[in-house]
Image (cartoon, rainbow, N blue to C red; front, top):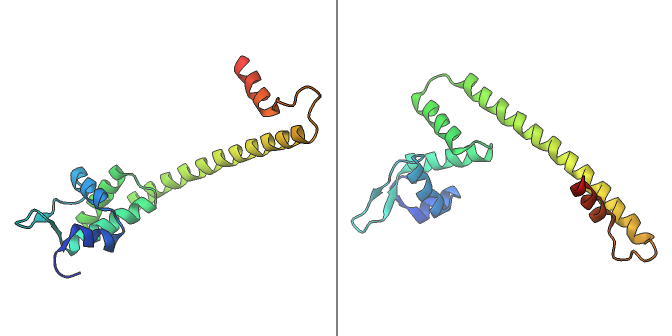
Length: 143
């Protein structure tokens, strides 16, 4: 896009919603756009590239503060690979920890589901309304 574009066109081209573009402006991730006499925001190719950069950085799990930092590194045109590598190492460690937590949760859910299935196959006489998982949770609360 060689000429200035309105916010709707930019949203469509970048895959970033209009509200998000406005938010990025307020947060300083995107410089304030120029306005037409009618008050419409106009964006040039630099702003569009910035939005694409922010979107891609978010896909990699970077926070808005980290993206600000990346933008500074990008704008300074200085060797920044070691710093970016450090940020990526931190992101990867956090993802690996989350995966471990999710695997533990998956294991717990599978165990609970097996208890439910056993309880449904052979309900104890007079305990048709009991659930072994609820009983286990209740016991944990009492301890």
